[in-house]
Image (cartoon, rainbow, N blue to C red; front, side, top):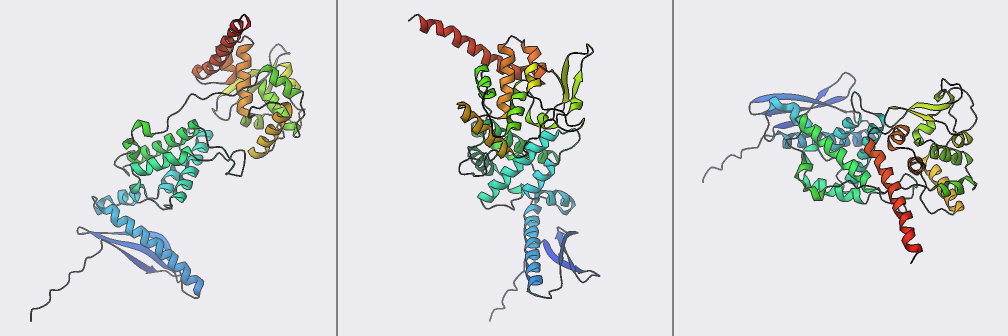
Length: 392
């Protein structure tokens, strides 16, 4: 009878071990042996004494996490040596963990930029939940994943003004493009850090990516502003703030921050103006106060107390603006973006030059202001075209 061949057992390069601690718990670590080199990695995961069913369930969950990390390390070892263990660990890092680090920013990163990064992370988390891949690692991100994320962003609901997502409109093409651009930058950073060999976004055809569009800026005509002035709003503080923004061009974030300390008197002792550092750009802006602006500025309550006591929830503000517009017979979707756009177009319509308007709005690039100039030019064309219609 022929002797049976001895089965050769495959030795896993990564094994789970435990080490007893003085408090009775056991620390879980990985014992890595690959190509003659040994390495230990402590996972900061712990098993507790199994005193009851709850402890056993907890340990089962902990071991499941350890097994997942072990599997990721084995997969990531392909093409690496134990000497490159840091790269192996980073490659197995969860996508959400890496984006979370990116969201924390660095030196000189503006608060508004960090806010947008966190919004992008929220869309990624929602996308992962929709495809049931919450624990996907950086190594698993490929072109197909990116295509799926693009498709997801195209239909992502804008929950800024309503909690009912079934009724919420989708985010704008430019907002979706901004999120995808931040995601791509995050992947580029992973390449620079030596975690990824290449950015998977680069494998997409330009036509597959989200492209920015020159958005149509909604604004109010002078007649519509007058209509709103003559119409009551059930949140008077929202009406005051919105009209004040129409006559100063301030963003909502700056309206929230505005205090009497930001009102400065010029050397002539008569002219008063706003001097404030804008929240979004962190750049100072100086805006002379017109009589109409003064009309909608509440009385001061203290040097460091904001003028406007506004709701902090965008949903509440959005509802007040919507109902106010309906009462005035205006079908446009009001927002504090609209009040700012109204200020820009109104300045150019009334004869202010583009450079002055740019300074008043705190634009860092005059090309941004040129968008308002195009709107005014279009209005002029429409006015001239009325002549042709009149004599037909």
